[in-house]
Structures are given as C-alpha cells and as structure tokens.
Length: 297
Image: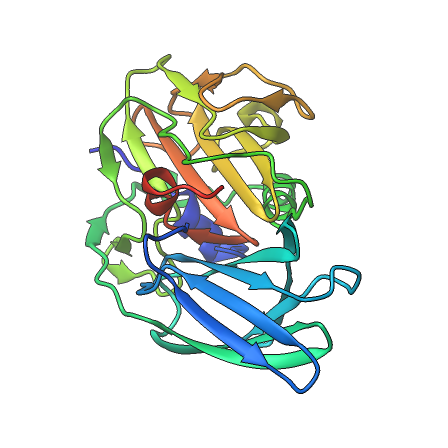
C-alpha cells in the first residue's frame, strides 16, 4: 500500500486548513413583506465531507448578490442564470454532525434555512514512520504557497459537468481516513484527498478545466508535498496534485479537463509511486467523489 504523510506532518507544525447536484433537493420559499427568496440546498441528505450547493433565486437583478452565512462565516454567491445565484459550502470529517442554520441575505431580506448534516464513518489506519521520515518538518515556503492557493476564490467558473479521475490507477486510500501515527492518534488529521497507485511516469490528468495557480517543486523547498500542481477552477473550487515525478504545465496556463499536467511520482513524503489528489472548497478539503459522479453545471 502506498500513502502520503503530508497532512499529518503539516498538522504537527503549521496545518491551517487541513455537487453537488442531486436528483432531489430541498426547496424553501422564504418570504418577507417586500420580497421573496427561493433557496435550494443539495444534496438533500448531506453527510460530513459533502459540499453543500446553495442556489438562491431573487426578484431584483439590480441588487447586490445574495450572501449565505453559517457558523459565523459568510460566503458570497455567484451568478449562474437570470436572478439565480450559487454558493458552495464545505463540510469536513472534523466537524460535528447535526443541524446547520444557514442565513440567506438578499433582496433586502434576511431569512434562515436549516440543513441536517449526518455523521459518517471514516476508516482508521495505523501508520508507522521511520525516524528519518518523522523528522521532516516541511518548509515555510511550501506551506505559505499551498495555504494561499487553497484560499483562492476567482469569480469565473471554468469547469462544466463532472470532474474526471486524474489517474487510471486504482484507489489505495480514500478521502477522510483517520490515522494513528506511531501509535499516537492524530487528533486534527484526516486524509485530505484520494490516493491513486500508478507506475512512476504514468500520466496525471486535469480533473476539470482550470487555470494553473500553483507549481511547486521539491528542489525549491516542497519537502512534504513533493512536485505539486494546483488548479483553480473558479468560485472557490481548487484541486491539487502531489508527489509528481514531472510537471508539464506552467503557472497561469489554462488547461482542459483530461489534459496531461504531469506524471506520477514519489517526491516529497511518499512510500512509493502514487498520486495524491485533493479537492478544496473555500479552503477546506471535501470529498471529491460526489464531484466525479454527479458534477455541477
């Protein structure tokens, strides 16, 4: 089995961070004395790790875009059609399950809608690191660049339809795995992505249309992540590709879904050739699988 240990080592030192269109959805008409808001939240039975897609329909296109607030954080919405706006809200395995109270503001009204996020059972692994591996701490340089990349919120949506798997290799580690490292429970750790096993040099493909916003090289200080590419897909959605043996793109380049961006490797903290692929929404790692199976338009 291959695995990467970037997340747990980052959490020891500086870890600062760590659709979903369903066939059925919750529609709530929220009315005030002057205006009405229509709100749709999908999926209708979300679990920890899911992305909440919040669609808002307003009456007046000339007013500012609506906002959605939850747990003290406010998310802007983006125009997706006539008087229709959308925000993506992440959930993670480290959160408590239960009711989320969303405040939706728009058309001069402030209303609330409740969404129940169910618990979810994540696998648990025990990992033993060699003293040499355990001693690697990473660099401020890579942490600063990766943290800034994950927080990108570009207004233009570049992708359409489902995200595709970035590798043809089999999945060896799923999203959300919790771990013991050298017998000690990693309290704030979960596996922030999916690992694909593949031979060194196998192609790594862009999961969706996006702009290359991060290129990091092991030779320049990416000790944990190894050779890394990050794609900005717009509206707070980013994907990251770690441990590459080769990088075939440059920062600022627009790439299409399925376009080769590098090759599988074992750079950084890695036990063997594999691709670690993560999908982030507004800086938080979410489960990529719903984005592959359902997609967002």
